[in-house]
Length: 585
Image 1 (cartoon, rainbow, N blue to C red):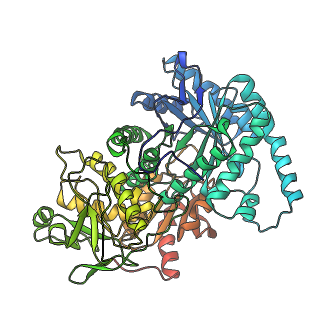
Image 2 (cartoon, rainbow, N blue to C red):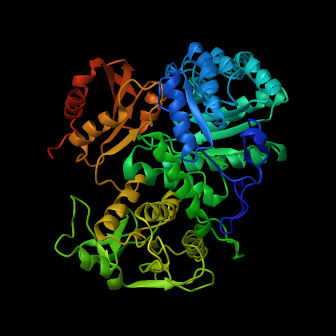
Image 3 (cartoon, helix red, strand yellow):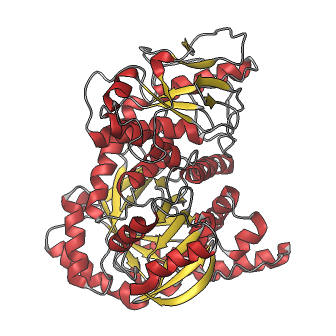
């Protein structure tokens, strides 16, 4: 299956154009040859007209081109009329998107007042009970017929009133029907979306945008690639646009890195027509990150012809590339099953001086100039006799690093060689200083996309000039890519009108108590919509169950219910201790 024209030469995927609203009167067009659309979501209670209008206007003022609003109930959906009227009276024409879970009747009501509807196939017409059941073909077809009966009225209304729709699948909210037939897999996510699209197409409706989201960047990348490959298999007229995002990415540097890896990798593949960087922060912080991330992509993609070599990795399923072990420094070995190592330049090492380990577990493991590393030009054939030799791409080449390292891995594979690879975020010291955010995004896209494809046994960060920041960035990229853990990992939703507590303050309290727990993954969810499923990869979960009440999970199983919020962080710590995962700071 093919998800892009070339692994080594950039071409933006060609899609049909989907209008959201009237482009002549403030609407936007997603797909086609149009610029990638930046979007975000407000966090106010949808029943609070004034707060929703205020946050919408604030997002539009910082460059947000689509504003999403959660719609938990039919009455919330009806209030979209008042919100839209208030926003339009202020002269703001930004299109509004209703985010609907569980209630088809709310989606139908919302479609009367906004330009786009987002539905989630996993919970639009299904209730998720994590039930195990074997479906015969006849039973499965009967379930699809039941879903079509519930979904068809919305499709017909959207077609007649020129409303756009996002069919947005979240890794954490696949239906029991899909889970039982496909498992918790990218294939299941893709088929879930296609089933709903087939219903829409039967009714002559095509104003569709797809999304495949996970809190794990590697899963997000695999799902979106598989979706595009399946759409191409289905035919030329399945060329619907794709929305990109890493859901529950979290906040601060970690949230930005996860988003840059997932979104940036796909943009470099030529996939993506609209993006959201989901941060557990004020929504207005998301749009500058979207803008800065999009600004990095032209410098990171190759547009000149190179030799088209067979793919050195499976683009739809993560597997670390096989490599030999090579010593880097006394007591430090890279390759094979060793952790991906962190290398610094001698200049950065010298600047660290007497503080070579600025926080526990975060330290430079080798100096670049001291390595016995073979530097190669992957655009040309080369010969390597010894697998036990570290290799990298030579500095100064006029080719983006992502393409260069993919070519290097492909040439090694063609020779049957398993030399470990040292990845660089840039091929030479940056000629012009970058802001810390630009450096973070660029390093994350380059190194994260390669690591997500299984390439890389050591990494070198040079875009960030600050020595301690550079070192921390390297380890944070490895953690976000799921390669190496030096601290606790957090899955945190970005907040919306469904959220039952102040996410930012709760995350701060939880991090203050648990950040030292190396490798422990904690999910912090404002409500139940994606909670249990998205927490499948988490060790522990903290989920809003009711106003002022919290439920605690182990994995995706709830174990403590209706805990007062004032006690919940302490009870979470007790739960971690109870399961033997606690260590003292």
